[in-house]
Length: 383
Image (cartoon, rainbow, N blue to C red; front, top):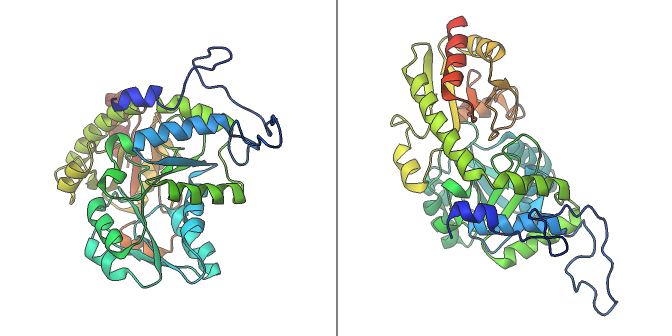
């Protein structure tokens, strides 16, 4: 069965009571049992632990990533939190990508550090650096590829090989490319993490997270943490995400096509000092992008000639592109990572990993590309 067929049909069936083609929203707290001896015969007891609408989304994401099972969470950060809680204890060590979402960095360095968990921020684009960073107490490797916001890539197969040699689970944040373009489990990873808020939803309507596990053992451990911490996704969010997923491939193809055109426009513009997009031949890891994924995605970053002052002026004056956090939506967004998504990353660390004060991040949407380019052209002319 092809991906586009799976994204529509997997995990869902017509409602047996009414024939409704859409999975109902099971907006309920509890489930009446037939008897004490047949407790959980229908699979549900309390919606903090499991919910039929959420389960339908979990089944769909499992099919799309090709995993053993999926656990959905209330936010993307709740998923990362559950990942850490599942695999890390006091005294343990974890390796994370040096370029990673600011919220993940904040959780690791300001929360889990307080409980005696050590993190090493490693250039995971270099598998040998990952291997060298492994300690006797390393219990988890988390890579984000493409990385937010610099788009640096990690060779998933190479790092997964290191992880397997060391006996350490390798989790990949696959939010930017989704299983439509990139399939970490097939490349050797053990777990895939998603902020479903982004491309799975695609409409700026929900916040949610998911972890697709390659083994049932890992999923069972994650689900235990989910129940214990009470961070399940709500049925309303799951229902909305189920609708968004149905058009994932169509949206991503159009958004990526738009992004390629915009990146080429920016690369040729005299006022743009630097542009970074995996689909450009000038992208340092262009060959890896082509070999590891089937598409380049819809995220771009660039710097305007004149530095921070002109970059901010562009973001404050541009039309059509909304100045906002988030990404992956059908609306095009423009973001200043230093003051928005990565504000909690220390200045020295930001500079070390290439998140400059003048970096402008674009999440390309579904609008007519001519209109998006015209808006950029007008803003660049003003600054």
